[in-house]
Length: 256
Image 1: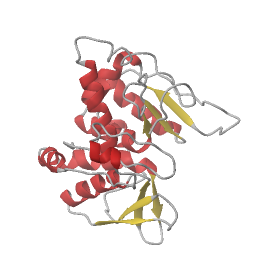
Image 2 (image 1 turned 180 degrees about the vertical axis):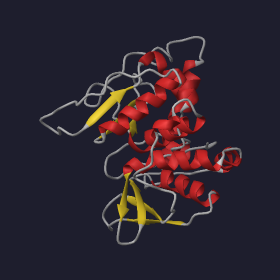
Image 3 (image 1 turned 60 degrees about the horizontal axis):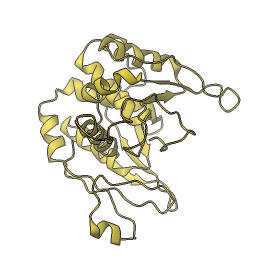
């Protein structure tokens, strides 16, 4: 968990809002890196077992690729800050990793590791009803989940992947913790017949944010903001928190 998160202004056009931008932030037009204070994450990891951290990384592996030639796994994202989180977790587990930018003109970062416990054949079915299951679906959400970037937009929580069977396992784990999901569906067969997704039901949004949450610095900050909005007793600030989810392409903010 990060106590402060300042997001960058992306020259490619993606406006990633900070939770509380300062005047200096507003005056600074150049690109800024995410400012992380990882003390709270380190504190959280100190009371997190190795099997739980491994489960998280296995869930996040759905967004990674394997290099057979180098016997490594590559996590790739435009957000370097999340890869730094993964690097911290791998370090706590005693595994080395390295982060590099892929291409001079691309805003895309890669973390590569040879950690031997990682496996594409990892079986998550047995994690239903376990805390490791929560860690697994958290890692999966951080890699392949989505929610609005704008904390004032109508909330939705989605999982999306081309591996439908893995989505079914995620939904089963969530259900074992009484977090209800909608049906797994293909949003457009014409666009991609192999792309699947499901949404967490609005009635389970708060339970999802409390139990699953996120270790992705930006998603974590957004969830913490949502939880503050949810706890606000007066005013209209929380009126959108539990409304029906809005899929991508509809009104509102684009997802992560």
